[in-house]
Length: 277
Image (tube, rainbow, N blue to C red; front, side):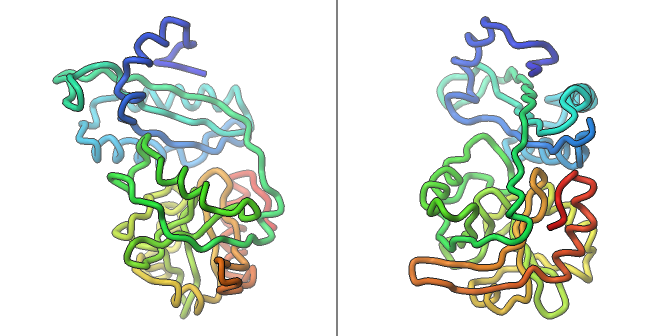
């Protein structure tokens, strides 16, 4: 683990307990897949951290991004296989909610093992549920994840993921993953206007598929029910095909693990060190 480029010490607890990150959730984070000593999609993860800071009204020069990338690569080489959680934490400062003019910041990189759910690559059932609330700046991965915690509590244990809809009935995202579905010769994914997170894997897929093969859209349950294929995804565990959607009334939809989904798994999973099926 690296805190500001060094090993944490007991004295770091002093600033952490007084930090704005702990008091108010002020900060951003990302989680990177590490395989064969390499951090995957590191450029996109750094981009998302910068965008997240911008959404919190901090300038990009708050951090030395090249130094942060060097530290990520250093720990990735040591870890070899697993994941890194990178957190940018607002330190002590300010009065109440009002920030200090010169706010202190800290960077924490935490290596972890990653347990893969091998069965999920053959297809999963998802729970259909209302999003329990929207986070501020929902497209950014800031430290306030109470919405995801409450959503997890509302998802029955037998489901490893849910597909959520917002207060307008619009499909937005999974609890920890973005959603894609294939319909009428094109991939679709919820627009960020629905409250979806701007995920790294989502960004990779949008770039790979290009404009004529994917649409960012606003849709409801009916559009999902008419889809030919559907999957959820993130940059740690890749693509999980969804074969069934349920709620308290029973089964709402079925999908096969179709050729379009398998094609995308074949493109990205070797890079991520993940199973194809």
